[in-house]
Length: 400
Image (cartoon, rainbow, N blue to C red; front, side):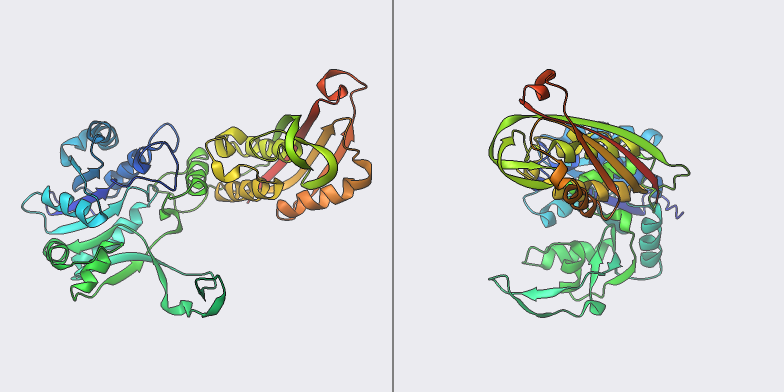
């Protein structure tokens, strides 16, 4: 690990964004991943990666909360941290951070707090490249998806050669004089600092990034970060954890009749049947499977990942719930062995569609085998009175 004598090196941690797409009820950096905020995890990674002055740029009104996070994350190096208020744009926020640097700092890293799990090795590579003479350096990952050029009407108009593309990450490293001069000279609001430096006429070098340095922007991104941390991952881990034994989980769910539209259950639509009520489509079978899988993997429960604070799952069907759960398990180093689920209800009658339900649920789980059985309760309880549906699932997960 590269250790830089203070105060030659500084890290500006940009945490002033609003986080509108995350919908976390607070500016993005102050949303919790576990019992700690995104900002806390990002600062812990910065402190673990290098010895440097650290300037944290936050929205107005959050200075005290940021300082608490910073001191807790830095421990006995808290005297190296400063908190300042950012501006209306990223460039204004970075400029505010630059204004707080100590006089002797000559190398600056600009890091997004939203990339909270960035491994120390990425910091090392960026610092080494600047030390070797580069004016500006960014970590990148190759673009692996097929990229298409699409017009305003959503029609594909042509391919894009991905061999010339790379996804930029942070921290981005600069000679201080280069970054300060670039931000002072540009009249366009660039999406990252390297673009401003390039516009000022400087070459930007690249080093290898890391998949774990992803940016927490949406709810699924936050779920992925939570899954990694819940299984013992940290900012120094570059791969999902390796598990050495299978695990079993149990899940249950109940929903009452009275929803709008038609019934959705076990991933199927049941025309003519009364709908179940719920934040999504009320599919008790799919929800019980989700709970069982999350329990087996140690990732919490359905309320943690699909609660009413997640509007993107309002009205969603089984396919969305189950596919998202598969992604959470994969990020945490698990794959699905099999799932068994029992439905308790007077209606609908499952016998004729049992195999169809098993195929639909299995497809949504990426092909994992699913078995479905159904029973009644001989007139007992709310299911016996035909007031709703109950489902009970057992899931086996295996090391990926």
